[in-house]
Image 1 (tube, helix red, strand yellow):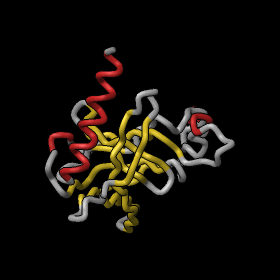
Image 2: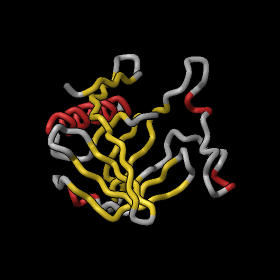
Image 3: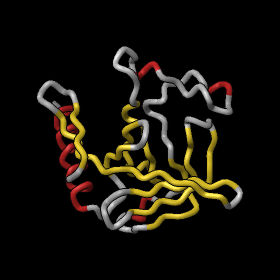
Length: 156
């Protein structure tokens, strides 16, 4: 019962936060995954919730194989936090600078900035030696189905 209530509240809160477009918290579609940005202690975190792979591959079997730390290469990508050093008390702000982001594809941590754009998307920027690149994350509405599975749809 407690888990069902938790997931129901999670779905409602993610819908509200995505609908309002005033916060970076919520579920986001990246180029290769779905992440959930939320308050983790005193900072924002972006936890990988799902990794896109071919139908015959279990997403939970995908590991952090490119990590520079050899001891972390066998951990699953699902559950990894991508963001560091972004204050969680910045709710409502449209720009957060001077944090860090982990790129599992490269196995490296980069300086990072986050920009909540007027169209509701999230511009996630990674920088190395003053040269920055970015990816646009799309907001998602995640609902919990009666059977416990989740359904994600782009925010319209």
